[in-house]
Image (cartoon, rainbow, N blue to C red; front, side, top):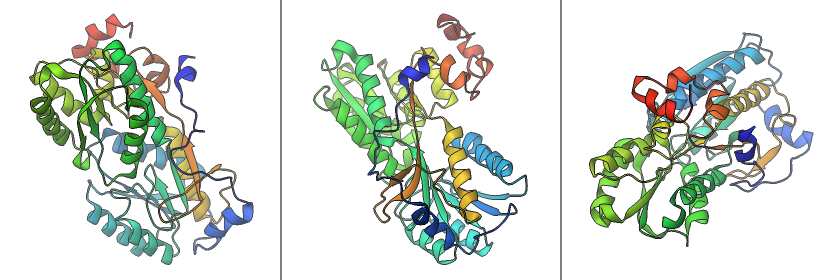
Length: 365
């Protein structure tokens, strides 16, 4: 299967990893919880960061809820809230979850540092916390995400491949994610590791709140500063921003390779149409399943040893039991073997009337 050739091994970790601890070490955190030894009738608080990126409401929430029901014989309850990209709102949501006496929290932090005190509050209330997708600060009990530095490397390598011999003929623009997201720093570091010395970076931005409109504005500024004839490619850290970037490029009459991440439907359709070169496919099911499994185990006072095979250090907590999931470089050549094969989208989802001709050209039927 072609996917196997491009899947990135989770061994090259973007964070500091240590060997797995003993059963006693892994059990210490969960045993300290007031929810230890609970049965299936648990209450899980789920806090996701925003709803502008399609993945959170369409995939993460649905998959986590489904897995928790499965693991608890349909007795587990999920209490959900979305912070809509507001860190203060998310901190208030944690307070509400504590008041509602949830047994465990799954938190995808809007701001990894700003959530620290709220994580401590949950811990003080005997509520274990699973950091989801982003490595939140504070005394978290478990963490699951993707190998984020390798995501950036994958994007950088794809951009170099797309540029070929033109890599140094002009300049690229780098559109990184938000400075409040620790993942963004890791994507950026991975991309620079691959691109530095091989391309000329004309302009580079850290995009506020990952918003497509901010990426669009930044791209317009880059075009004015560099000149449209001098831009040969764009590193975009995710698909949402790629959409804003491509709108600006089109308005200026520029057609160059653009990267992405998340395999959003709009991003996949742009790949089919040729306006976006690639995305990073991050299979949400393994990540969501790991979060659900760790949350249920922590709520029930069980060890994480059989679930979390890695250890990750955050700025505030060492050796956090973790599950890191591999990623795939998604281009028009492997759409069938990735998002379609895994049931994320159907051909009809992607190949709407506006994209039918493009789909036909690449044999996507």
